[in-house]
Image (cartoon, rainbow, N blue to C red):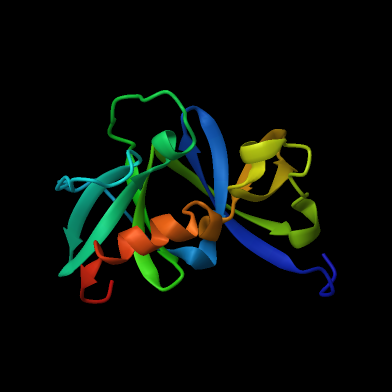
Length: 158
């Protein structure tokens, strides 16, 4: 590819049987599930918090956030630890896939999705015969939800 084409790296993962992707630069790490401590009075998609190397991290279940059917955790279930506006949050996913290196122009807008359907996505790409929605991690939580999570995440850097 010519140098003038901007490339991005996307890490793919699975939630509810569908494949999604996230800009790899937003991912801090991917870990095996840890014991979650429940927190009262949080939104239903917040599973609770975990302790990771001294930091208390809220855990968001993307199946619940996307209103997908719940499935039991398996050996391939992972937590993707990401940064969202200066906060560290864990995302529960059913499994991780591969890292794709694609031209930024391959990610198309999601304007074809009506209403709330497209609110969580930067775009969609067609790669290797698959349609992959690219998550806009900053829009997975609303401003009010980010404020309510601010009190949950405490402790050291991850």
